[in-house]
Length: 104
Image (cartoon, rainbow, N blue to C red; front, side, top):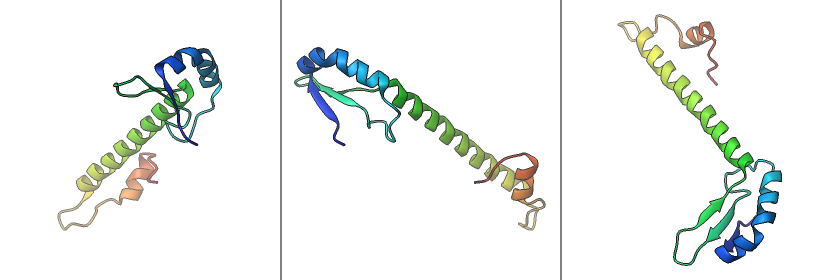
């Protein structure tokens, strides 16, 4: 679906209906899925985004940050558990299970 683009004059006229539509929007699969582009002549475009899409994006970012932290932690633990011969003294999977961390 193409993103709706409006001039500032069109957006001013359509604002009440745009707000109503945005307030009722279900989260889109992408941040821009329900966006409306407002373009002033000679200016960079501005996106009008429903709160549902912003909230969903923030939740996904938080989830990805947690996953990255888990991966980084596991790499540190992996390095710390390596014996001097380069063989693990404790398996990463066993340590993850003990710490109740899902590896994927």
